[in-house]
Length: 613
Image 1 (cartoon, rainbow, N blue to C red):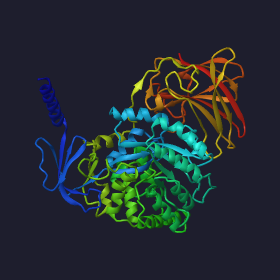
Image 2: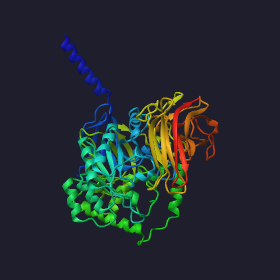
Image 3: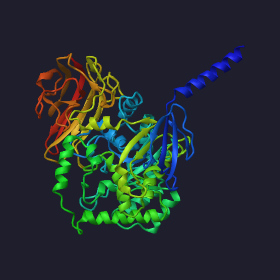
Image 4: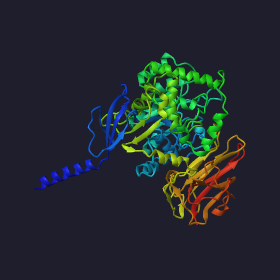
């Protein structure tokens, strides 16, 4: 009796789970399945998050949600293997949620994110898993460059971009980053700066190989920032999976083709960021994914734009990169879709569709461009068994287009519906959220009064957030070293030693996050201000990193520092804001202790016992 009861219960549970799964029948669609076969009329059944049937005579299950797709084209969700969600394509810092929304609006369902620091992975993954943030599938990347290399000049410190110059250092760095479980690794292998400014440092083949070796052992793909023929040879020979950014310094030669073929290297030309006559002409979809302020600026810029002269160096590079992509494609090198979206005049989401239009403009057929944005990109990221084509068993990431993009690539912007893992994306809601002048809401919590007593040697605060350094930007940015030190009277402090760069204005910062990864927000309205113990030498400010400030001009208060310890209390009312309006104490992300000084100067401080009072 017991076995019979268990079996019956199992069958009932299975039947109940099947009934509970939502079923969608997309009937009479022109299915471009991404496999390379021509579009064909079919009905696609989605059960839960999976494609369960595809064919011209598929029976529609009883109770299914039926979508009439007659005269519309159903495609796999698009990929973008190169994005920067924390950049807005304009002058403001990005609203992460608006950035992610733009991709779903455009039917881009998988992206590689190249701007998050490692502390951001876990909180962002949780927000997405909990449904708080609506986003495509995101592969978070750890960034690795060289001292004085591209990526290292951002001023965000080694916690955002690790700097290595030898294979030994690379192996050690990978030991530090792999516990954060990055989805991909991005290497800045090439310091060429388009022949317009002095080159930055580049990474040698041995160092690249060490990173690739450790990444592949962990099952992680490696993508690059590579711009030159010689740089591409080093990267491909070292075994990277995707060479990203267009090779622009010279025509591609047979040696490079042979190396890429030998190592199975794919190529992401990121044409959207290099388009010679940016910004591109506006389209309704482009404008819908831009915030109001950005939209006005783009429309004004496009209206006053003059075509670039043929002898302009940027135009020459543009012609070279188009020719190089054609050479690679003709040689059988897999071309995938990446954009550098978020960079100036390269809007999130829409830039991914623009990339396919530019591929066609450079010589690919619409079908080839669409495959680059689906199946080929999925394969390059090792996701081909899960996504990238419309086949039974695949994840139901789908985009329905009111047109025939496989015949006329411009139709790729006529997005009708989008499904992410079988769920319909509310595009109208996301478009309205982007159109709002307000940033999208994030969870808020009230922190305890005790922020950090500096007793943890690993740099973590009592909130379990990680203190980190940042500096001014540029190849010769200021240098800052953080270290825990012993206080003679007992306990520990955190020391910051600064050597300022050569510019007229220089700064270096110790950032103390109030929430993990500075993603969610801290409400400190129950407190009067912040107190801390400090000693040092130099000029200092305390900044409030707040969510509503998008030009990085954070509310600030001067801090008077002497070589002797003293306790300072700063009421929140003392913080001034450069822009109009009061400081919103419900949206804090971090306390930022900033040292500033003249070229070549120095400063130091020791900090202890940060509290709210």
